[in-house]
Image 1 (cartoon, rainbow, N blue to C red):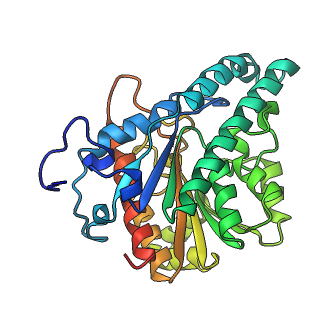
Image 2 (image 1 turned 120 degrees about the vertical axis):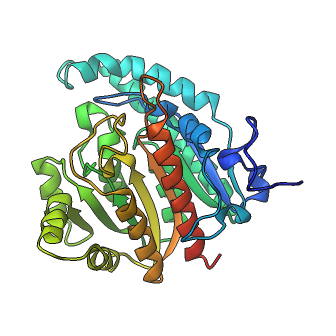
Length: 339
């Protein structure tokens, strides 16, 4: 197999224009085109395909992490079952979402939750399978409900791990709008159902409810949230970002899983995401956070990237930013393993 990273990627090539199979790769990506409970803007089920297409324009030499592609990176084919579950669940959920959860058909609600559980099962079993083959697995959503099964598999494999959660939202709502597996409930489900997760460290949070704030306060330190406003005020008062990164990272245990929602970034970088919120991290701040995890000697065991939605007018900006962030996530993950 001949491959020249300096040549343009063929149209039929894999993620980042690479020719690797999952078996030949250290990094295996699971696309999960699922957005059943999206409560504002839509389109995240097309996030994996947008990232795949945009990734072929990413130069493969990275100043900070070198040549991540050499370890092998491959994305699995999308599951037609997952796409079908998403389409059917989204149609059933639409009237409930439009009413803000006030007009609930119990049968429709149960069906949506059942489809979400099927998706969770698929992601869990697929992640577990590739972990068993000594791969580093990343989930590419879809909405932010999609990585629950992956986090479950990683918590089983690495008891005591911590989650570094980048997001505009706390995602600690209990069964939002009646949906047990809502994208707004992912971290509530993780923290109440997965005791092997020792710590949740949240960064960039700037949109949350009182009940979510109370859950953080009552967690006895198991949830440590670095609210975006407080980080921004500290920077305005002169605190360097590097010091903030060190403060964030020291809250994490030695094994770290990254759960990153693209809307944790400044929305100028992801304007088409479903629920953009002013504020957030710059691209370089997000990359510096990844570097800080590795600088502290932590190991990134797995990751997900979610809530990427293509522009409705066909623009590729969101996919472009996401593909480049994904390559940085992969590069620093490999660096944390000494690669």
